[in-house]
Length: 79
View (cartoon, rainbow, N blue to C red):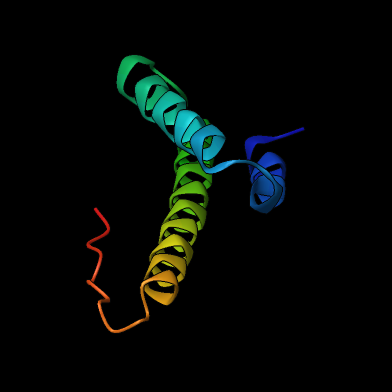
């Protein structure tokens, strides 16, 4: 299974697993002499994972704000 195919199932994986995969891709891109096509595929997978991770964080922020909705909602900064 290719990196791109694996990223399709990311919505079913825990956020921490997505983060681990992103870190692994970054490390490999920084430390390896990959052929351009392979490097681009890994980069594409990393971007997809990053977008899924960002979406998860945004969902968590909305959930927190909903929990605190009793008038004391404090905006949560997602970094």
